[in-house]
Amino acid sequence: MILTGKARLAGVVGWPISHSKSPRLHGYWLEKLAIDGAYLPLAVEPDNFEETLHGLMNAGFQGVNVTVPHKEAALRFCNEVDPLARRIGAVNTIIFKNGRSFGSNTDAFGFIENLRQNSDQLNFSSAKVVVLGAGGAARGVIVALQDAGVSNILLVNRTKTRSEALAQGVSEGQNNKIQVCAWEDRNNILSGADLLVNTTSLGMAGQPPLDLDLTGLPLSAVVTDIVYAPLITPLLDMARSRGNEIVDGLGMLLHQARPGFEAWFGEKPIVTPRLREFVLDA
Image 1: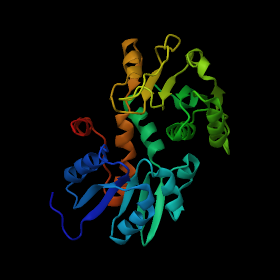
Image 2: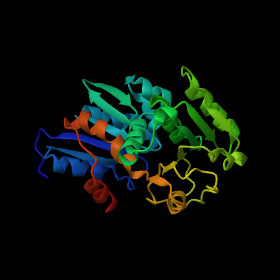
Image 3: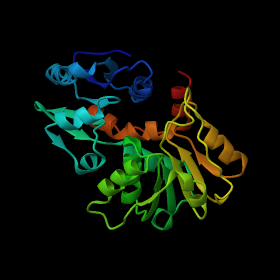
Image 4: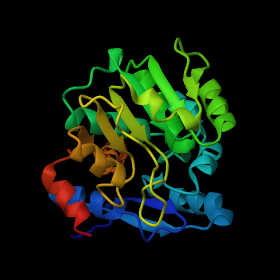
C-alpha cells in the first residue's frame, strides 16, 4: 500500500480494540480497489472518547466505526443521527463532513444482508422469528426484522422485565407488537418457527453454552448466531447436525462495514467468499 498526502483516512474506535477484525476487513477492500487510503484501529478509553473524535475530525479523517463500549456515547456525540440509529439506540458508523458528525447504525443492515446472502428460503413477511436475548444486539436485530417486514416476533430472555422493556421500546410507532416469552418456555416456543436468532453471549468462546433443546424446531427453520468467535457456535453445530440451515455471524460483520466504507472511500465494496477467508485467516 502506498499512501499520498491525499489519502483518505478512517478507523475503528473501541476499548479494547486489538480483537477487532475491521482493520483487516477494510484493508482488504482498500488494497483490492487500489484506493489511496488507510483504516486504523484506535484504542480509546471512554473518558477520552469525545476528545478523540474531535481530534480525528480536525485531523481530516473521513469518519470512524464505533465498537464497544462507545456506541451509546457516539449517539450522544453526533450532530445528526439517522432515524434507524435512534430506534436502535446506538451509533456504529460516523461520517465527518464540514466540521460536523453524522451518525448511523449499520448493524441492522448487516444482519439482514447476511441472511439474504446465505439463505434463500426465508420469506420475511410471513416468518415466525424467535429472538434469544434482550441486549443492545437484540434491539438491532428486532429493528432489522421489523423493517424487513416480519410481524411475528417472539422475544425470550433470562430476565423477563428486560425483554418487556425492549419490546415496548422497539414497538413504538410500529404496527406489530413483540411477544415476550418466559425463559422457561424457550424450548416450547420453537414450534412453527422459521428463524431462530441467538443474540446472547451464550456459546461464545469463554462463555457458558446456550441451554436450548431444538427438538421442537422445524427442520425447515434457519438458525443464526450473531457472534463469530467461534464461527460455528455450539448452537449452530447442533442445528446443522439435525438438518437445519445455519448462518454464522461473520457475514453480519462483513456486510455492516459496506455503507461506511462507501461513504469514507467512495467505492462500493462487495462481500465474497475470498473476503471471508481472508478475514478468518487473521
